Image (cartoon, rainbow, N blue to C red; front, side, top):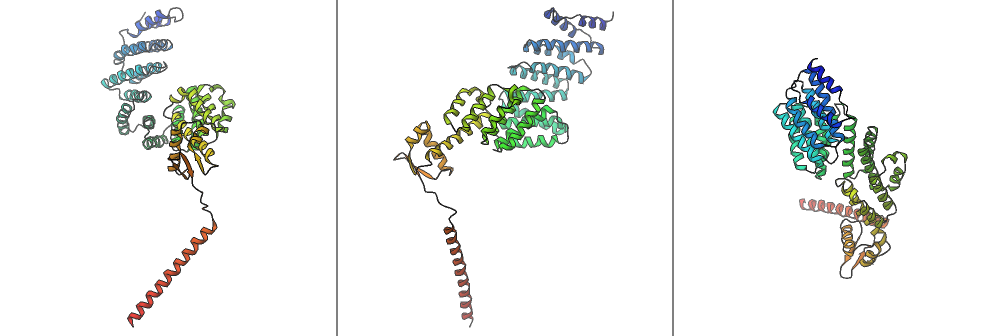
Amino acid sequence: MSIVEELQEKFDQVDETKSLGGAIKTYEQIITFDDNSEEVVKIKEKAIYNLASIYSEKKLADDLITLLETILPILKEIPQKSKTAKIVRTIFDFTTKIPGNEDKLIEMCEKIAEWCEENKRTFLRHRIQTKLAELLYKQHKYNDSIELLNDLLYEMKRLDDKNMLVEIQLIESQVYHALHNIPKSKAALTSVKTAGTSIYIAPMLQAQIDMQSGVISAEEKDFNTGYSYFYESFEGFNSLQDQSNAQRALKYMLMSKIMNKQPEDALNILNSQITLKYQGSPLECMREIAKAVKDQNLLAFEKAKEDFQDEILSDANVLAIHVKDLYSTLLEDNLMKIIEPYSEVQLDFIADQIKLSLPTVQTTLSGMILDEKIEGTLDQGRGCLVMFEEQDTNNKKFEHTVDIFDKLSNVIDAFYEKTKKVKELSQSL
């Protein structure tokens, strides 16, 4: 019996259901077998995939990293670069399935990138470093991510690899958005769309692009366009059975409707059949906020913020920002309702009515006066808000008076010109 047949028989005899430890040991023996002929490599590849699958199911991230360290020297001997790249990417993908494991993934990326540098596996290095930049972004290490992305962009532009450029610039747009640099984020997203016109974009990547487009539109207060992008993103993730991202896109759809002062539409979406399988804390949070905005109830809004604080803070770059803006808008609307009947009103009375502290009321009213949302002044000595009388800008009498003065001005100018000519004529005589 040949070596290949022996290894194949040993592989076929593995029964993971009877003895998982025995299966792991056998796979390890096959992987470390000192022969890298083409037929043996095929068996080794199957053993690597099976062993990585076991570690992933058991959430053994450390063992996956150890497996990678074990096979990297072996992969160096395999001439087919595409096969080694596939093996490395598969182990990496198995590791990404283990939640809460970002630090170990970063460690794994760095080891693979170093190995790729040593063995001149450029394409694989680019792939892994792109994943590393994304992981650094998710870990809020924005400066490290941008530094790595800049190096990758320089290389990709030289190689004119549009597929990689799209992925890299999408991550760049997300990082700049997290840094609140909206112009650069939008510029990177525009580059993504430009490069994407000449290549095939996978459905998952297209859904991510739509999501980021919606986020940028929402930042620019264009919530109608944002809603359209989020809907496209939701459709994409929903068709791909990516429940987590689909729920996130649905949450942003609801946020767009609420921010656009359409809370009834948001509640209708929440009551529709399509949202049934996505019910959970994120959608309940949006439901309570939508109800509070619909009723213009500031206390209910504050309660929703308090009840779903973790949910809001976990999405600090998008939801938390818009919830803060929404609270300010709702507070101003409530203040407008209270002060509307009065020409002069005590600040203590306003604070009592709206159930907020006096300094908060004073600060908000000051801001509204400066933004010219209300016409009035704060009398600090008497502790009251004095409203100015509204000027009727559409009064026809004022328009007629201005028109008369304009005509008189033209008559005076005409008289002046005639007088000037007469004077010049008399001097010449």
